[in-house]
Length: 472
Image 1 (cartoon, rainbow, N blue to C red):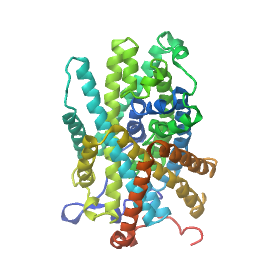
Image 2: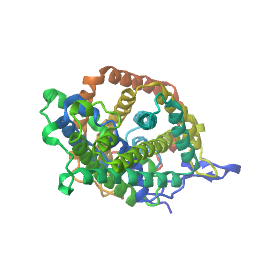
Image 3: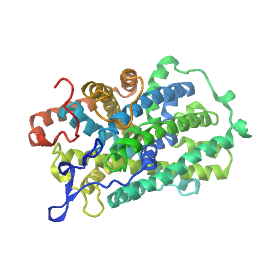
Image 4: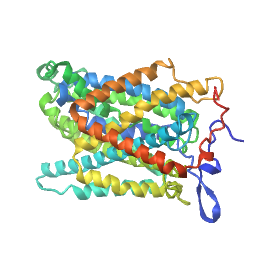
């Protein structure tokens, strides 16, 4: 019998040999959801966040860290409620399809794919940069980074192709190592635990660019947490969505809040803000400045593992969103196929590989990060509208939820306000990219409305066994 969380209907399955139904496997637990969310994001503690220091100084980066932490806490709470109820591949895309409408769903699906694919490219660039840094330290200058970028993306795509359980178990292990490395670095350098290398009193300054610098720092403050919403992409592959999705997502945001604060504390105590603001791998640099060979090796491994875990999760999430859109005919149905043996959306995985490679090999890191952040921001702007409509159409007593986020609608309004501030912060430094990105989504929306929507399977849009919405 179909329950509130059973969405494996024939309309959502791929087709295997001889017309048999083949769907995604339900093999994941809460730890895999945690690994997916934290694994995608933890690289933000190893690189990228420190550009906020360059925008406004060390204190501005801390304010941006906590500002973004509040924003993403709202994201995590809203996602935990809606996704544990709309438990299907595609995450926010599937939510939009059920709650808002087709045009919003199409745009949200593209936001997801672009955010994760750009983040994947940024991770691959970082892998190449890290290997080149190690080579320079070993006396080998002029190393070509491109083969390592290609190898990283191809290996992780192959891993995703072969099965989700192995993919996210791999992420679980390397994410745990990368997070442990941050904790060990903090314990080894903090004066509370006997360390004496941190020099906050000497290095900390007032806001060098005033409060305008704080506002500009908000842009890269998002990098501390960008991607935690990717836990929703596992909804169709967890054994118990009602339990695993809220637990994994909320545990993930708490993990990231701790890691982000400790990262800031250690790095600003070891490096002048002028250098920290443009460092490529700040945590690795912090380990080198600590004077400990063990910490340098550990954080080098942690940086590599964090980038691999993030790229691995990005391939998983982008392919699920692309697959879900193909399955519903928002995109060509060819992308909606499930591998008959490995039970993965293999065509979507393969299709997105060259797109990631193009950006990883041909675009600068800060531009790739910005494109990822902008797509993520557009997605977060949709979420308050989504959860308000969800509560209005299906009040708490009408359908069973795996989790009910507290203080509704306050988190939705807070998230909407914080997104507005973040847009302005991005505009200050990357206004051209922001306008270009919005123009792109307007154009593809027109294409979908006037051309692609005719191919959408309208009768199969609503797959959840819910009662009729309130007011309909």
